[in-house]
Image (cartoon, rainbow, N blue to C red):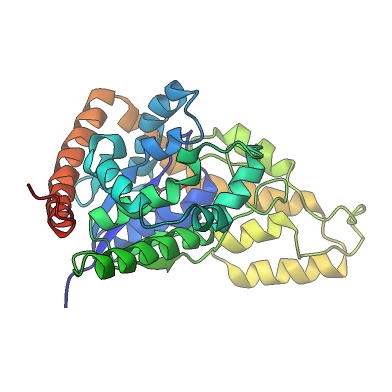
Length: 332
Ligand code: TRP
């Protein structure tokens, strides 16, 4: 049996939020003692919808690394690297572009949603439409077998495996390896406003680096049940974001179940629930915030760590590319 390899990544477009936390950060910490993980700062992917703001991506690199370290991702156990420092990924992307039709690329449900959300209309840049192909290159260059992701990334894994099968068949080889998604417990954390997904660009996120005051304020403004006006009124649980968050972060599930029943009966106010959630989030975020401060003391050390990680990542990607070139008769 071959050993599993994990490749995950994030677009550095700002600090990471609770959606990332439940979506992939917890999983990475959990897996780091068992499986080799390559963790990528996808700066080139971030540029596909931020090409006019390279400074934002540049600044976010450090923010995201700080988020990683402060949640407990250990750079000694994992290889943390920067996508743009591994040029093999872009070479591989170009080869893969031949294996995907334009129509197939445009049918990707996540890309479709993002094109709407970002207001691209009919003018989505080609680089953006093609980012799942580039993501397939990221995953396969490391021969990753497992990719811990949120639900919205499932179409990327599907696209990746289609490319793997097409490549291996066309070039009569077995060098590329199919990847499997590892879904996380909380499939998707909604935003504070009740929207389906928490996102920085959606303005509804609680960031891991938010101060205690900001977190409290965001929780107090959270969407609950608009029909629950007086404390005595009976309230709805479904779509009530405070309960969604309690389900995700409050380990005392029995108490949460009681609160739900009480809320539905009537006589339980939103403020009581929100105060409980604030306490729970603080217990989670305070130590993260503290470690973040410690790690921010020396940014040069962080960059050095990223460069070393990127060298190691490049060495592995280069091996795969050598095989890919040979399979494609490009081994002059
Ligand atoms: N698309 C991911 C996101 O938006 C980031 C990413 C890039 C990624 N390459 C990846 C995730 C490879 C998993 C595997 O956050």
